[in-house]
Image 1: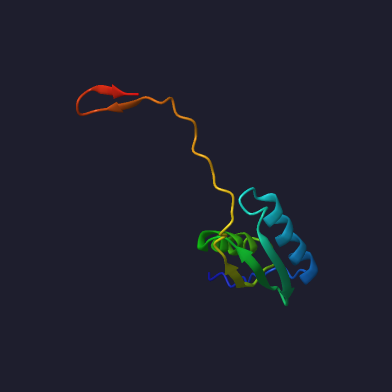
Image 2 (image 1 turned 90 degrees about the vertical axis):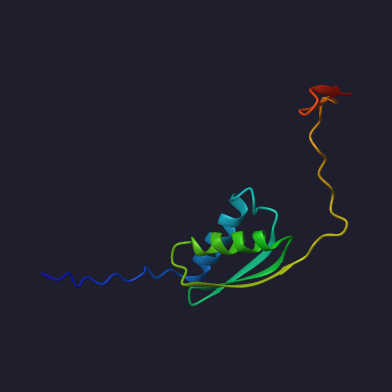
Length: 107
């Protein structure tokens, strides 16, 4: 016996898909601050806007692809390295460094 079952994707309105992508981007702590707009036409999403790295661009696309009803994602996102971005501070250290070769400490 040969199984000839055909599975067709669920068709969803474009506006529902767009809202779900935006919600998914806002709910993910890694993407909630992205400046990305979403449009959807015939279940094909287009992401536009600006992110800070290639990894951020890929993450936004991955999240969009995970939304139910999406057929494809076009990524028209610009990567911009922010020149005046706030710098992250290093975590506090105790001021003591261990030198494993000589076994001494430096303060």
